[in-house]
Image 1: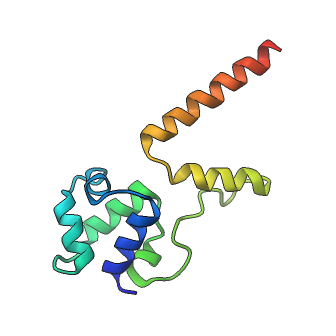
Image 2: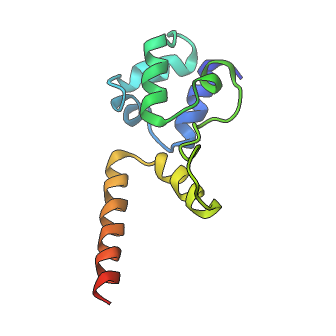
Image 3: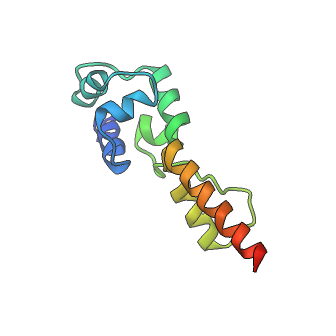
Length: 114
């Protein structure tokens, strides 16, 4: 799999349209489509933006070396369930993360009242 195919694979794994994927890194859906097709090069800056925004392992995106996503829990003493939740959370959009934060806050306030 080349970088263009990995880009498309990543976008599909995140369940995003080319437009939504590109919007998060200030690119058009058409630009993403062209990169996925290989008719447009994936620049170093685009790679940095993708890796930052989607927490992707740059070594995977560039060379195909696993894992796909950075381990957001490395260095933390967490049980496996919490690590899995953190990894899933890291894959969410900013909007979805905010919803999760509000839900957790609401549940914590409810638990404090009881």
